Length: 417
Image (cartoon, rainbow, N blue to C red):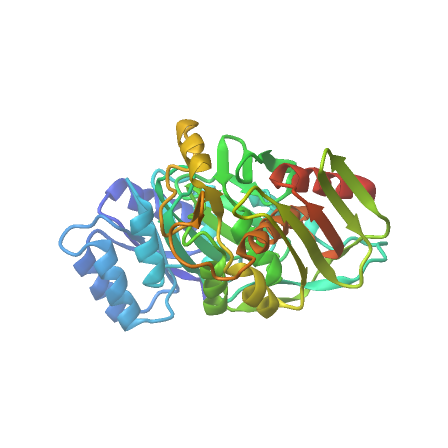
């Protein structure tokens, strides 16, 4: 039996176009021009998928989505919308939408979304520009770990730390070989989470390709790395939200979504077999062989922070959650003033970072006595996730930042070429 798709849109031209394209792809297509007609069609016969416009007469798309989920809880629904914003995307995803696409959309992107929603999206990584480096390659002696995605779509919203703009991320499951791919909410443009696309490493790590950028990705990437997630579509615009300045909310998202092993798909571990070292004045970054994954970081800041050192031995997602994930972004008050003058940290608030004055923290209590150095380890984990592969080795760092981390990742990949 052909797969049945119901298209709900008040624009006849869009319905006509989608009828033609989807019919050519082998789908059986029905359509409705308003919410009431759509409900009548849904009660008469359950389709396999609904493509639903937000702006509808009588019953708006979000209200209709709620009703669809009440009638057919497991029915996948793709939301399409002109003049979309992150709030609409967040609300639709929380109500159970399989995807959210902004008009005008490309038919190619819509077909990929349909395939993903129907569970037919395996292998779209090359089409999305995914991280092919994640795939196991014949002849390598390094161990193989299973590829993983998430069990369902989840969403988080907040404010960008550097842009100050209301933003969010929608995490969608993805097929084997996709890699971690950041994708525009408004267009089909995307950028893989790979060091080849690291564009800026000043106060945060930014990825950029073909006119689309994903800013401040390090906390999310650290969490995906810790949970072993290798295939994911991250829909967003501009900047990943700062949330509370830590990665704790990303852990909660992944706990909610669940990690799913993808049978028959493996990812090669990058096993460090020699010592790599970079020195720049008093800054030192070393990567050396180790039976596991560990990060030894020494932070040396002016008073009132001083010197802090922490050694993190990764032992699964819970160790990351307990020891590292809740450590927040921090900075001195005078630094935030300078960043603001440079057009950065526009979203820095009392609830999404730790502010330090001359006498210490000025906006609440620390979560750990050594929270600052633990946050630096969080950043290191996020930047080293740009390897596109799990790392087996030990990272030893002193007073280094995003630029040094990304430079070392490039060195590691060059050595393995």
